[in-house]
Image 1 (tube, helix red, strand yellow):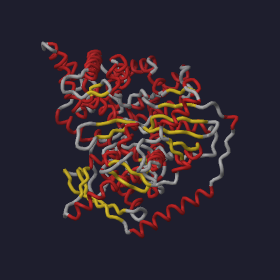
Image 2 (image 1 turned 60 degrees about the vertical axis):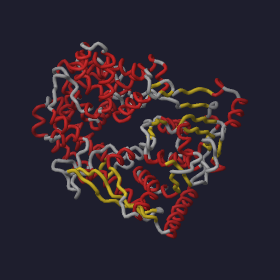
Image 3 (image 1 turned 120 degrees about the vertical axis):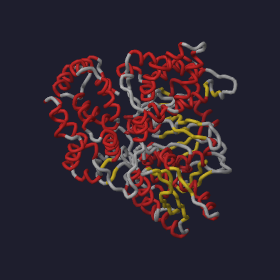
Image 4 (image 1 turned 90 degrees about the vertical axis):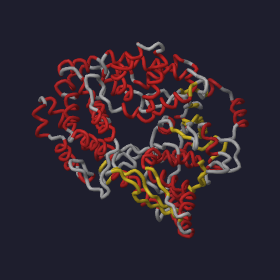
Length: 629
């Protein structure tokens, strides 16, 4: 992302020309429109991991498109209107910092994908392409990603129409997404109903559509499906219901869904109730006063591409091998892999990246090319990046096999590069098999255990929603003490503590207290859709997955306690000039450990003996680097 002064790159005449060339609509002109039209592909075949306020903002922007528009417009609105639509506090200080932060969070959201129906092609996009803020006039212009044009403009067939007023009172991101999906599938449901057939939703596909990452059917049913039913039924123009259709053991595979139209009079009454409530809230708002002395010159913020481990790489990088290799190295987090892998495995990773760069930049007869890149190879690579938050996890899994088997076999071939390319593309297709592998060739995993590890991601609770023995339960979060007690039991504290030094025991006690806090944390916006009573199921489900795999939290908490040994941690924090907030660093490490427990456990398994590990972790500045991220 780059920030540039408009005065540095354009003139007022240029701005006037741009306004003439591009369709710009204003909030004052179209802000009262509430009907959104989206292609079915945009609704059904995309991931959507926006926050609740971001979803509402994008739906409002989409509603400003008229059926007669022939171009994707840019949207001009006041900063104050943007603040209201984004759910921010218009009366807090640092107004423009608040606005910019909100825009950056939306623009830097993980890249979405559209899988074009009936084809094998996938398009990636970001919601926002460019934003211009005129701080003196307190107005802004938002330009969407051009990829969205065929999915929002001049729609003739296969599109979804919905009144976004019905979503205004929804408090769950899943409810809004399920409402969208129901509206897009409603005609199909009614047709199937008339033919005596059922509408079936594949559960894995629904997880993808909702960007749902937890691994429990009972949790998904409670926090997504049942929450959506409560916020849709009786409050919108449809009635949504579901029942289990197909199961494999205790694992739910598909659902039978019903999407009945609400009675027209009831739907109209629901609409009026929502509008009346919104009008009452509007009357209570105070007018916002802008202080001109705090404003700077006009600013242009662009979000064409953000280099980060979890963002996909545009096809245009296929034109420049050097730039592409640098980007792939960012996604791979090479410094982290070098610490985790043996020298032979790390060298295998470097060779894999070279082969991957070559494959992305090579267009053979029959290959599809776009902007200079090989679409098939880029698609496979970006699928891993989007699903795994980068290439690190996958490379950690494949490196041992390539070091021990694939590269030695390639050296005996007459054409080693084509051989390696073929194997690599096959492994990219089956990347999920490797993301659970151990990070060292010395840690071999039996085939039957690999299968168990793979299935662990999709472990389902029984249909009656009975808690699994040993699991943390939402009820455990009623009080902080109850949550701490449940965590100590799950960690097998009585057997764990004797294995720890005094410094590690002190660290362990604070880790448990922080874990209890995170399992009950409810930060507005950040934890929307994750709460069950007082329990934050994002953390509870993550810890339950550890219990499923290792029978307890003992290994995870022991690894964290040794990593954060108080006999080492606080002394080294005091010595380091780079660490300004040691408590914040401690909290950050614990939070990441709870959300990504497998990473912590694997790291602990590959460390040197304890004394060497202590020295190396500080000498390398690893914790300081993590905190700065």
